[in-house]
Length: 286
Image 1 (spheres, helix red, strand yellow):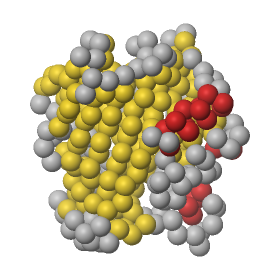
Image 2: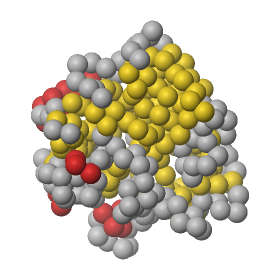
Image 3: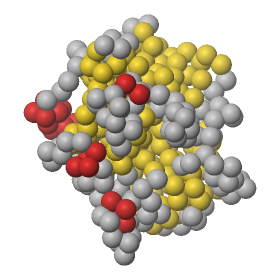
Image 4: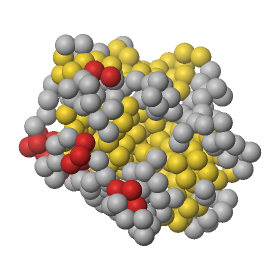
């Protein structure tokens, strides 16, 4: 078996490939939202960090949004809401992949149920110097209509890169599918994919996120920062477009749902634009 799963303690699931740790899923009672930390690229390169001092709510690899029916489920301030895993995640091992399903409920601080979320993460067998992770999120309006508000503070899928990879101080580089290089040409811009590459412990490593063309508002907008945040956000249009009369909110009617699909590529070494394009077309043709 390529993959193995180990419940380290209540609320901590270790995912390993060929007995080498890939990620830990943290979903217990003491976390404000389920997330993966640590997260490793091939070669044992840890490329994300948890709870950085400048933004303690940045949780390595996570999902959150700053306005769900007006409730902040992003910042982890005392008045913010939270996301709870309904039960232990279910895991299936299928030879070349590990599939983790996490059913989560989004709640206000007072405990009001806002919506349900089905998160499906597939870790694929590493190919060469790339680890592929499919990250699918379905928001389900099971309790009332849900309005995902217009705010840049959010990420349907979000990562925080390690300090040495940051563009601001670590010499990292942000690029996107439209030829953008650097935060000014990538933040708030629409693109089919975005990449964040830098140095980690003397090696070069990076993260690429591919936006599936079936997603709402494809190509998506990117909340990607030189200080290390790397998030997909198709909602913050008033900020991204710089027009306060633009409304990027999305309503999900009660009983309905909306699904987002992404592929994350954790890579050792640099990837050229042509290489990423090849992987993008392979992903969308699956």
